[in-house]
Structure formats: structure tokens, C-alpha cells
Image (cartoon, rainbow, N blue to C red; front, side, top):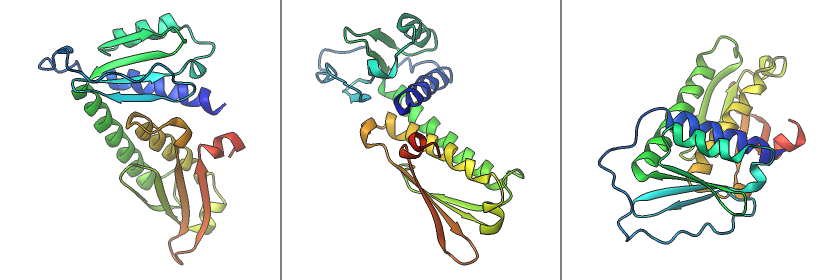
Length: 207
């Protein structure tokens, strides 16, 4: 379940970021000096390989079960990814310029911060007073009105934060088995930490 969920998130992220703009024309194709890739065996891990000119992101076959791989590859190319190919082991490798990868990382950062601001100011999440986070979005702290929080559905906001954090970490090169997003819930009036949730474990537990 976790792998299938992350597969959907990965493919969605690639598509959305690819649609934002065309590849920087100043970026040239491989000049023969690019570092050797190390993506022969992925075995359940998303590999992010940063060469001299390009960045490769490989999604393993286990993440793509039930998908039409040829359609996935064709869609990626149509959406602006420099190259996409189906590998012999069933995995799919996306190649993009370093400029495109940097653009995607910045877009994910912007989307995450905008989502956080929306949660803070959204009238549908009235118990949330503030949200703080670290640089790689692996740690979030929700400052809330404890009583209001516990008597509402505002806890669902944590799922969106977790997804944003995992998106960012995945494309920054973190192995899927090492993904970690921790969300602490704090009563802003007393400073008491009354809830801690760890993702992606929480998805498997149904939280």
C-alpha cells in the first residue's frame, strides 16, 4: 500500500512539475564526461542520480504494478521530461537537466510552504494556530488549540504535510526505505506535545 501510494505521488509530481515550463535551452545534451549512472538495480528504492549535466530519477517496477508502462513513458515525454525509458527490469527512468531538477525542487518547496500558509489561514482548520518546519520538510510542528483540535477533523492536515515532505525528500535523493516525516502536535497555550505521528508508517497503520 505504501509503495503504491508513493508511486501515485511520484508520477503526479513529475507531471505537474514538467508542465510548469520547458527545459532551459542553454542546457546541452551529454558531453561524454557525464558521471556513470548507478541505477541497474533499484529493487524497491527510488534512485536519484545527479550527474554533471543531467539528473536521473528511477522509479522501480514494484511501484508501477498494474500501470501501462508505455503510456507512463509517453506521457512523461509529452509533459516536458527530457527523456523517459522503460528498463529491462520493469522500472522507468526519467532524465532531466540539472536546471529542470532544480526547478522541480524549488517548485515543490514553494508548493509546500504555500500549503502550510493555507492551513494556517484556512477557516476550515480553525484549531491550527501555527506550523513550523525544518529545511528538508522531515519535521513539522502544529501549534493548535488542543480542545478544538481534538474535537475536529483538523488532524487530516497532517497527511498533506506528510505527503509534501515525502515528495521533497524523494526527489532530493532520499531512499524510499529511509523516508521519514515526523509531525508533533503542540497545545500552543501550554507548550505540551500531546501527539506525535510518524510517516509513512502512519499510512500503513491507517492513521
